[in-house]
Length: 309
Image (cartoon, rainbow, N blue to C red):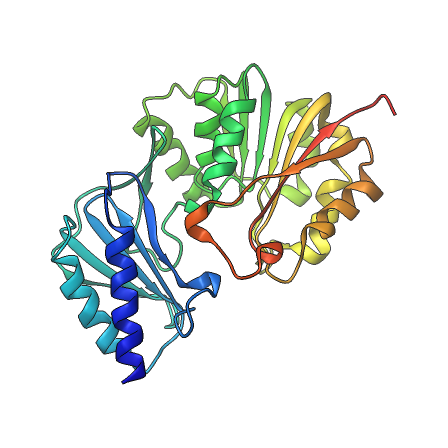
C-alpha cells in the first residue's frame, strides 16, 4: 500500500512539472538527486513529443511504475514513451507508447542537439550542463576556445553562437565527434575555424598546443572511463599543462561530476599546479537537477588567469 501511495505522489509531481511544457528539453522528475525516498533509480525527461524514462536499478514495483507512466503520458501532449533500463547489460531501451520520430532533437536556448534514445547508454546530450553552456556562450566572443572531452560538441555550439574566433574540439571518440559536426550543421553553423580532433588528450598536448594560446578552456571529463581517464589520478595531468596552452587572460571552466569528490579537489590542484589561475565562482546548477547534497553534485568551477600576482 505504501508503495502505491508513493507512485501516486510521483504521478502528482509529474503532472505539476508538466504544466506549460514547450519543445525545450526539461527534466520533470529527478530521482537521482535523492530527494524522493525510494525513487533514486528514476529519471523522467520531456523531449518535445517524447517522454524518456531511465531506470538505474530494478525495483519490485517496476511494472506498477511503468503502468502509471503509460497512463500518465496519455494525459499529456507527448506521443511517445520510451524507457531505458540502465541496470541491464547494454542498457536496452523499449518503446512502451507510440513510436520514435525519425529524428529526436533536444532544444535548449535556441540550440538543437541530435539525440539517440536507442543508444546503449548516453543519448548524446547532458542536460545538467545547461548553465555551463550558457556561461560559455556569454564568454566566448573573439576567443580561441579549447573544448576538452568534447563528446558531441555541445559546448562548441555554445561558443560558436557566442562569437568564438576558433574552436578546437578534442575527444577520443570519432563517433561522438561525427555527431558533433552534424550538430553544428543542425544549428546552421559554419564549421570554418572549428576542428574535430580524435586525440587521446593525455598523450596529445604537443598537437593541442599548436593551436593555442587559448582564451577559453573547457575541461569536462568523465569521472571514470576505462583505459582513458580517471579523475582521481588524471585530472592533475591536465591542470599541470594549463600554463603552457593558456593565454594571459584565459578563462577556465573546470567540470567534475563525481559524487565522491568535492570542489576542493579541483581547487587544490589548481593552487598546486597552475597557481596563476584564480578561482572566480561556481556556476549554479540547473534547478530541476536538485540534489540532497549540492556539495557533491555537478561542479562547474570558473577560474580566471591573473599573472600580476
